[in-house]
Length: 125
Image 1 (tube, one colour):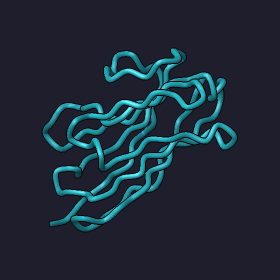
Image 2 (image 1 turned 30 degrees about the vertical axis):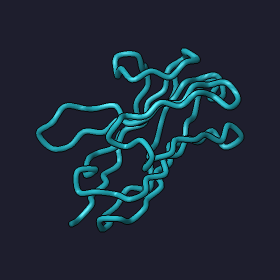
Image 3 (image 1 turned 45 degrees about the vertical axis):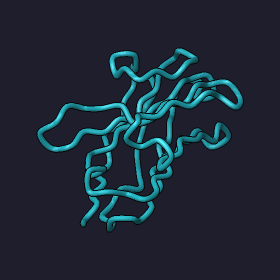
Image 4 (image 1 turned 45 degrees about the horizontal axis):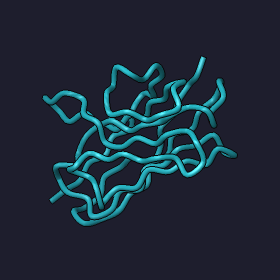
């Protein structure tokens, strides 16, 4: 059983940066594709970014965050990161990390078996 714990959320201002972390326990972290999703109040959960498992793995981003967010992983620390820059009020949401035993990251939440509890990110204008 894989357990995921997100940290790093908080309240920031427009234009600020923030780095989220997702630490995993159980399973074989290095073989899992990983992803970040987010859910804003009153909205459905949406894809943010995904990272495949292989070294130099392919990354995928939602159009709304491309060129502002960077997803990465440190297999030695069983940790995934999401560096968020140039934050906007519309980035306000609960951010969830997810993992799957598949090697290729995908943008569909149904493809992920394990989820963290979420961390709140609030961007004030």
